[in-house]
Structure formats: structure tokens, C-alpha cells
Image 1 (cartoon, rainbow over the protein chains, first blue to last red):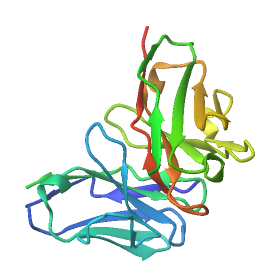
Image 2: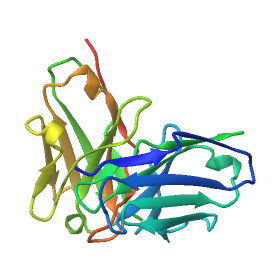
Image 3: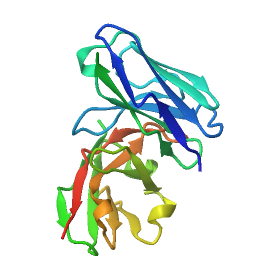
Image 4: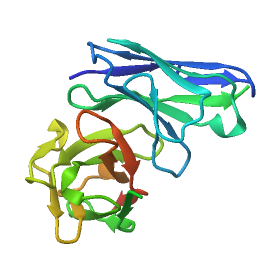
Length: 106
Length: 120
């Protein structure tokens, strides 16, 4: 079983600043890594797949990088609607999600 | 456009069963697996398993084996997830989802979620 670990659990950032979220896999997942955004009361929204490909309709301020076991989601300039929770998920083997990172206003 | 519409909220007693439906539209139903994910209140996302509407093949999370059954009805493009012997820790929002493309891709189309509350 592959375990996904996200850090930090909570990230405090000012609007307009850059946010960097990390995700680590307990073993290699190649580039089969996705990032989701989840707003309260809503289903997750796919942001990034294949570690670095933006899903349809996702703004360019969201970018993903990494491969193997270390991955990063970067939000270049935080907008008010970006202060929510983000999850990584590997889909290389039995799919698994990370525990999430909450991005809050500093 | 792809749409997944789930059934409404349920309240069940411990030991009972629940069956959640997920009606798909906007694509050819049998071409894409349906995945089920749940989220306990204030917690993260848990992958439950998936089903192939094409051949009925299923793959369930180990911790749910023996209690969960996923099925589909191709005539109505509807997927179902039944969970039996409900416990309080099964209280969660249950989501169905579909991958964005055929092949090794993550879910990108999600239902709105169904809240299942287990309480005596």
C-alpha cells in the first residue's frame, strides 16, 4: 500500500503571494499523481494530473511538478477563492489520497 | 457534458444497509469505470473501489471487503454502491466519480455527493 503524505497540514499565506504545497509518496508512483481542490460542501475539483498537466479550465496560476516520490503544487498568486483544502492522489497502484493541506489567509 | 447525479441523503441505524445511486449522462456509460470515494465529517478522502460498467469487474478497498457491493444498470446508465452492516464510522459523504479519459487517469468528473448518517 502506498502512503501519501502532504505537508504542511495548514499553510498561512497572504492574498497575492505564492503558495507551495508538498506531497510525498512512500514509493515511486512515476508521474501518476493528481492534485484536487475542495471547497466546503463540494466535491473535489481536479486541478492537475500526470503530476504537471492542468485539467480543463484550470487557471494558469496553478502548476504541478515532480515525479517518483516528491511532488509540488504551486499557486503563483493566491486569489480569495483559493483559500480552501488541497489533496494529492496517486493513481499508479491502488489509488490513495494524501491527508490534505488547508491554505488559510495570513 | 458529463454529469453524475447522486441520490439523496440517508439516515440509517447501525447494522442496516444503504444503497446510493449515481446516474450518468453526457457520455457512453460502459466506456468508463465508476469510482466511489467517501469523506467522513471534517476528514480526508478515502478511495472505496471501482466498477467497470463494461464487464462488471469490481475492485474494493480491503477494509470494506465483504460489506460493499458496487453494481451498474447499463439500461439506465446508473451505478450503485451498497454498504452493509453499517457502523457509526461509516457516516460520511459518498461520492461517485469518473476518470477524465480512458486509461490510467484520475477522476475528473464527480457527483454532488450523498450524505449517509449512521445513528441509533
